[in-house]
Length: 216
Length: 115
Image 1 (spheres, rainbow over the protein chains, first blue to last red):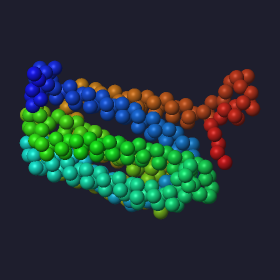
Image 2 (tube, rainbow over the protein chains, first blue to last red; image 1 turned 180 degrees about the vertical axis):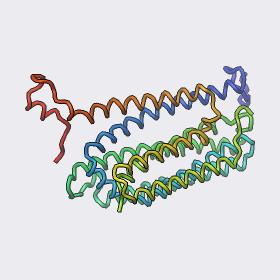
Image 3 (cartoon, rainbow over the protein chains, first blue to last red; image 1 turned 90 degrees about the vertical axis):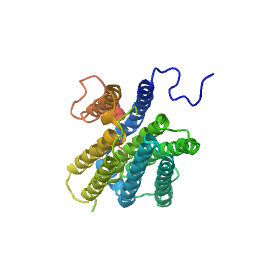
Image 4 (cartoon, chains in turn blue, red; image 1 turned 30 degrees about the horizontal axis):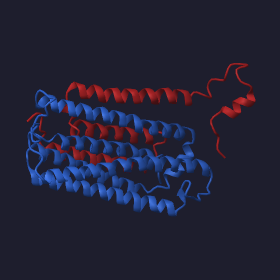
């Protein structure tokens, strides 16, 4: 009978091979994610080039301060995630749990700011295409297009964060039960790769959506 | 230990650099550099993404297989961007050859010029 606590699963020769296999699998998944977000970024780039001034006007309707603050929150959560992986590698269970919890907490802060302080206000301000769009300045339909991109891109990013929070809850319970050791911590490391990737997507979303053209 | 364990100090150093770059990109957005605003913002974003990928995601210590996957993903993204923009940005430079489409159809198939 297969031992569930075995460090190396039976299909692998040794831990090095097992580690390579899981990392490679995760990176291939992240490559497909790059393609997925890449399509959105390409579409955005096209319309940004076609309707430059309207997109700049629309971008200035967003609150760059909140966007920058949220970037800092996400970078902090990446640090705590990296430290969680470090704690798992060195077998520090309590630290691992603490860093997983802080990563989830910071992720929740990001989502709160995104949905309550940004999306909700944009909806009330009449900047939500399809639901409540009342912007009446010049090139209103181009501004509306910008907000379509804004809501879809930040929305898909937020969905990735919510998925990350869910997976991390499972890992938290596993860590609580002592499922990880310096010999066996692959899931934590893969979670780290995913979480950092979501951070990288935001690193590009922030300047592209919030910092278009000079603000005065 | 299967893989390289980076010192904690390094994580804090990378974190500090990311914060400085975020502050920089935000402040620069309030300075008028003309078209260079976007170039600078994207250059800083690429720097930040590289820091995260190399150090937080351990790519610096990963095997060549991982690097090939990452490079392939970026390369294919570059193909998509270059070919698409190559089309979009040069549409007005080249007029369709005579008799290919009547002017009336051309105006219909041109990119939507919204009101």
